[in-house]
Amino acid sequence: MQLPIVTYPDKRLKQLSEPVERFDEALHTFLDDMYDTMIASNGIGLAAIQVAKPLQVLIINLPDEQGEQERSELLEIINPQIVLSDGTTFYQEGCLSVPGFYEDVERFETVTVSYRDRHGNEQVLEADGLLSVAVQHEMDHLAGKLFIEKLSYTRRKKFEKEYKRIQKEKKGS
Ligand SMILES: CC(=O)Oc1ccc(/C=C/C(=O)NCCc2ccccc2)cc1OC(C)=O
Ligand SMILES: [Co+2]
Image 1 (cartoon, rainbow, N blue to C red):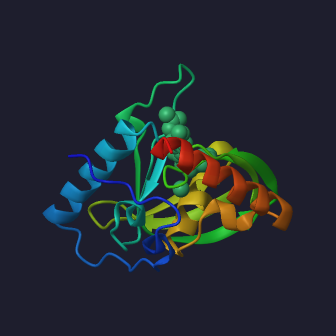
Image 2: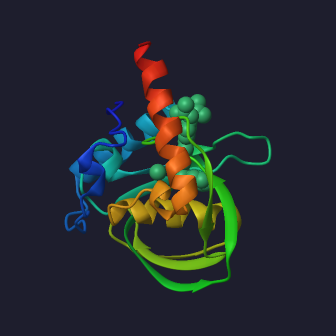
């Protein structure tokens, strides 16, 4: 089922997420609810803190060449650790918790991540391109960090001004 998404400037997004210890039915149901929420909101990545659960859980479902998000491609990443990182890349990021705002962010070009799957099995992911950006963006959420915190001072000022306007438009005030 769909869960409500916490949006900036809600303080809960700054919480540190705790490691998952029990790979049980409750976790599996939560992962399915995260998926429903992400797809319903047109997202390609979502961290548990964005639905108010401070757990080290993130999901990523990148569109394929036809722009379709196949569930078979869904990545469920639990208790991730970056074990290798290399290079530098820039990508215009967006976030379901910062609706309507997109900015170029600097990330590692490639990352190797060790993590657990929904059954607790150790997995290793070597990511580049959009997947590498998505993994880093979502792992920042687990540390209570949003992509807007990586902006330069001037671009952060631009964001604050723009975001206030977007929020006002939303409230129709
Ligand atoms: C108005 C609004 O909310 O726009 C959106 C903003 C962000 C998003 C989704 C962002 C998202 O999935 N980010 C995951 C992290 C990520 C960022 C950059 C590259 C890879 C992974 C969806 C939006 O909704 C629509 C209809 O496009
Ligand atoms: Co995000």
